[in-house]
Length: 185
Ligand code: URA
Image (cartoon, rainbow, N blue to C red; front, side, top):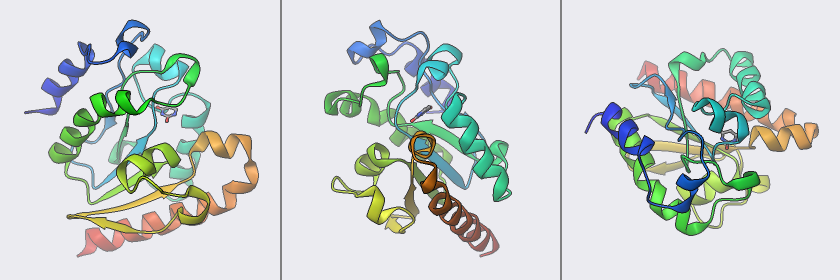
């Protein structure tokens, strides 16, 4: 399957009730052969309206960190665990994640990133391990098959608590360094 077929399937998806309240499904954006992929939690209001992930305030902060470590948004791929916005941005329900995770798995198998960065706890708990503790384990590396995985604070958490920005910058620098290293191999 190609990414475009998957995008169409996602746009028409009725596997869970979030399809009743969404404006747009938010499939993913960026380089379809990216070595680096970011995975957030679920679309927020701006993302639901535009159909593009991480374009609201949290997304703009993510852009600043990408810029700070000299990673271009066009060179990475950005997606979410859930493709549709949960009402009032509540946490995704386990059954919604179960219904939706197949799309992300397909995206990963088509894009074949070398590194996946989970943005926040919800994504890390789904993709790295169910008991992931973001405060203790952000910036740690995990190997899953051929893919290196790590998690950083969700940019929305940085908006709520700017003291976390220092850790975020260190984690992002380490991600850039790991990426450069892998691309040189
Ligand atoms: N938060 C997320 O987790 N994903 C988005 O796309 C936007 C905000």
